[in-house]
Image (tube, rainbow, N blue to C red):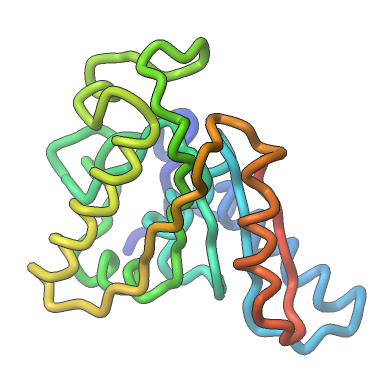
Length: 197
């Protein structure tokens, strides 16, 4: 791959080392050094906009040293479709099938609140391309998971993604967080934990 990357928040190419994904990897190295950690991987959690960052990092930065990523109630997703522009697809990202296979080998948990199903939520992205993913966050998360699983099957790639449903919770970071914490703290091996909220 070339030496540049894509800024998923702005949809434009920037020098690879200036990306937010690279910054997070550098922060991991700094934490390891400062605290004398031997951890070789880290966990990351994000809700809403943070979940958009988390799942895009898994997809667009497959070399990331992520052990478990949790993306809770994202408003829209980057589908494995190179005909769609960045933020919604992989057009002009340089992400090929080999990169996607590496992304699918990460453990990504798509956490969805069953009550996050309001098609008129005040901060829901309602652009045409976002609405094509589904009428609300719950549907979009399910559709993204299904499309990604189908792509992994097409590639013959290992698929370590899963959906975690949180019942009777809407677009509420505070009420989603305990379920995310249970997932991330289930394995108590030494590691770093980042939150993208």
